[in-house]
Image 1 (tube, rainbow, N blue to C red):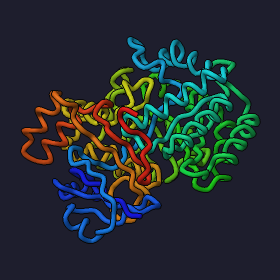
Image 2 (image 1 turned 180 degrees about the horizontal axis):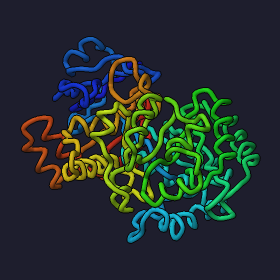
Image 3 (image 1 turned 30 degrees about the vertical axis):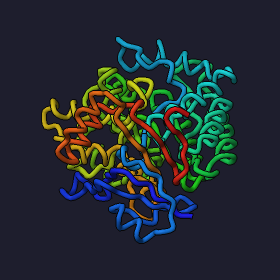
Length: 433
């Protein structure tokens, strides 16, 4: 059975950082998808309806439909610490975040947090996420269970560390290998789930732990590697002391064989030129997390330098340092900080839409599955509508074209504007249900 979703439709099947014709829009649009959730047609409603006359029609003409939003970096145990103000990265970790992550040892708290987290992702229009998991195996298990039940595309894994955290969050490399392997064997490639090998960061991982991570990655085709890189100057200084033989922060991962096209590193606010050259050569990706970088006073992402070097990057909310799970809000913060950064990249609505959809799919190796609405990909969709009587409704009613419409959505639309979220055509969230 084919279904046609009728709405105002926008996506970026081409890269706006490389060409001017990236944005594709339909004022009275249609996305047709089959029973398996595969898109079979996209275009003006009249044409799609004519070509699929027997299809059922879901009328969402009061909505703007965009590809499902993709979060390339978010921490599931950190929902409770959103808004912990007045601290920079290392103090924020020690005083607020790590104590909360230690609470994941309570099975009921972990299950409740996992259920809330995945529902909140879907409620914000996020269909796909690379999720920084928990240090506790049972809590990581709870996340996989909740993600499977919710129907989202989640890549995640047990977070491992063996120094410089808290004793209750540290394990030996041997234990990390055994616990990670057990989770990977159960969950990697199961439905819409994949495994991510996840050392917290080099500050908390010895060379032996990073070597174990490389072994785990080698044993899991299709898995990703994710961690943090160059988030704050204090972190970089700590890495320099802990790894005196490494030429820079990136080298701590390279020496273990972890940097490749399957690698997504969060932040990279303070890269050297040589690190950017090597990231591009390895086809590794970066998760750009603008609200988190501002909240912790880490700095402003050097987007222009990443673009010039050809380093791939998508958008991440980085909750709990990030200020919420809305990728639309992250787009706005990115726009703000790039406008004020010296040599910042001037962003248009097409850039922002691309960053929260197709660029994320590419970073996560899912560019053939989702990220835009090209026929052959999965019908991952986020439907947005202005609340009645809202400022957004007033702006959209007067919008002269698609740049104004998308600009208004990124500026004003948040969780309450997400009407429906679909993964492979299946409704995984509907407002009011």
